[in-house]
Structures are given as C-alpha cells and as structure tokens.
Image (tube, rainbow, N blue to C red; front, side):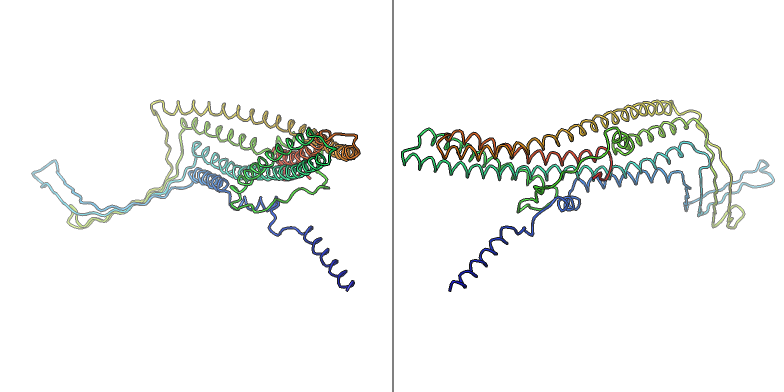
Length: 437
C-alpha cells in the first residue's frame, strides 16, 4: 500500500513539474510576429504598390527614347479635277472615286538630349522605387519591434501589479489577524489596505494598457493575440554594438536609405533641369515611311495604285514656344536647389540620429546594470525588513515602503531591457545595415 502511494505521489509530482515548465504551442515570438506583419500589413502592401507604380513610370521614361512605329489606314471619298490653260485644245476633266490608304512610319531619335535626360531620369526613378520598397519594409520592422516590446513591457507591468496586489492583500489579512490577537495596530491595517486599494487600481490600469498594446500589434499582423508573448530570457546577454561611433557615421553616410533616396531625387532633379535646357537644342531623328493608295478610278479612267517609301534623317528644332520652355527650365533649376537642401538636411538628421542613438545605447546599458543591482539590493532590503518586522523591530509601513521600491525596481529593470533592444533596432535601421550582432 505504501509503495502504491509513493508511486502515485511521484507521478503527480512529475505531472505538476511538466505542467509548470511546458510552453504553450501557440506562443507568439518576435520572428513570427515579423513574418505575420510582412504577410498581412495593408500599409506595406499599399507602399509596395505605390513603389511598383513608380517603377513603371520610370520604365515609361526609359522607353520614350526607343523607336516609335505608327500604322494607319483610311478609306475616303476623293475628287480629282484637271483644268488645262488652253481650254480650246483640252476639255476640263473631273473624276470622283473611292480610295483606300495604308501608312506605316518608323521614327528613332538619334540625337535628343531631352529624351535622353528623361530616360536617365526614369532609371533613377526605378532605383528610388526599389529603395522605397526597402524603406517600407524597414518601417514595418520598426513598427513591429515597437509594438512587440510595448506588449512585453505591459505584460511585465501587469504581472508585477498582480504580484504586488497579492502580496499587499496578504499583508492586509496579516494586519487584521494581528489586530484581532491584540499585538497589531489599526494604523498598520489602514496603511496596508490603502496600499492594496491603490495596487488593485494599478492592476486594472495595467490590464487596460496590455489590452491596448495587444490591439496595436493585432492591427498589423491581422491575428488575435490569445496568449502572452515570448519574453526575453532572464539570463540573456544583451548584444553590444561593435566598433565606434565614427565608423558607424561613415557607414550610415553610404547606406542610410533616406540619404540614398534624397541623393537619387537630386539626380532626377538635375536630369530634369538638363532636359528642360536641351529643349532649346535641335534634335536629329531617323525616320522611315511607307504608304500605299488604292483608288478604284481616276482621271485616266482606271485605278491608279500608288506606293511611296521614304527613309532619311530629319533635323527638328523649336524657334519659339511663347516662353514656356524658359519658364520650365527656371522652375527645374529651383527644384535642383531644393533637392540639394533636402540632401543636406537628410545628412544632418542622420548624423544627429546616429550620435543620439549611440549615446542612448551606451547609457541604457549602464542603466540596465544599475537597475539590476537595484533589484538585488531591494530584494535583500525587503527580506531584511520582513524579518525585522516579524521580530517586532520594524512596523508594517516600513515593509510596505520597501516592498513598493522592490516592485518599482523590477519594472524599471525589465523596461530598460526592452528599451535597449528597441534602440538596437532603430540604430541598425539608421546606419543602414542588415545586422551588426
């Protein structure tokens, strides 16, 4: 009988252990959240379609320098008349007939600086389109990281609020019991109950924050979050950023997406200005034309089928366009100046962001270490104060104050770790690298 009871207790202990350490199959981690966001986020799809439309516009400009083939056909009612000068010798002649005509024409620019500039501008626009697609993905990555770590922070705040409420409720009950036994005070009971009511209200507020942060992530992954997200491992070594800030400033100067886009926009503005200026220059066009006419009658009394074929070079140039081209060139020149200023502004913003994020990363690492030490110190202080309270050397208010500091230090430590991971992702995007750790 004792052996059966021992086996039963061992099996029960094993089940409890497995239940305590099992991980829910439906747990959502950061890589899965990113995958779902890239699959379902509507803003990403909208930005992608807009970039693809810009890419098509670029192809349109490139194709503008290619050959143009025109074919036309017509069928008309024609009238030919002949009136000789010496009407005494020849009579006037008149013929009305139906005539069909087919024309085919081919043109290829040989020397056209405006179309050439537009073609180069189209190629730059296609490069911009690719960068815009990449930027849309990077923006989504930042959005997912921000909302994911916001949920983790809200989860921890809610979990700690529940733990604090449970601990305060227990202290309320202990204060009531001690008061009934005659060695407690009503003041201790009131202090404990007041702290408990505040913590209960804070727990409700933390639950509201958690629900709101969950909804924010659900919006971009298009999936309901039915469980807690996978948290950072407590013993996880937080990655450090290698190299120094000067190196990353150099890397960002070449790889930052915003700067690359602004530089390409400057290039397109310069090409547009060049194209506007070239409107004042002549163009050389290679052409080939072929036409056939098929009348059913004519002045000679029979159908006169005629065909014509021409091939050659044509020099074209505008003499006067009412000042429109001059105004367009002046406007394009101003757009070049504006694009240059935007490049300068983007570089300054990048420089500021890299330096600011670098300093924030270093300071947050120090803050995490300080918060970790604060958690350990407050935990020891709480244990010591509780022991002194049990021995009568401390009052309950002392325990409540130390306990509040302990939970506050726990929240600050967890939050600083999430802030650090978020800073790393933002820094990676600003310097324009896929990963650096």
